[in-house]
Length: 125
Image (tube, rainbow, N blue to C red; front, side, top):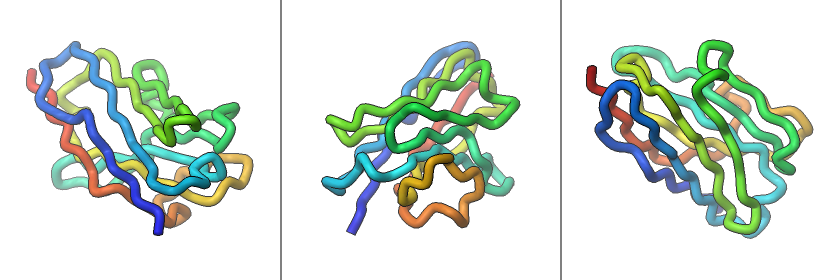
């Protein structure tokens, strides 16, 4: 069983930065492509960013690529999401997701088998 645990969410002001972390319980973490999704209030879940198992490939939602950065530390079985210049519209529950490595990170939620419980990020204006 693969478990993902997110942390780092909270209440921040517009313009602040925040880093989310996702720790994966599986020893084979290095063989999983990872991604972050988010669900804004009253909206559908949406892709934020993805990273391949090696960390050599990343992809982002077009509207977020200039402010968000995804990274991973395989030695710590942890994936990160650095979020800068946060805006009120970034308010959402952020989810970490994992899928068996395939070379390119999917952007569709249904492609990911394992999910964390989510961490709330609230950005006040």
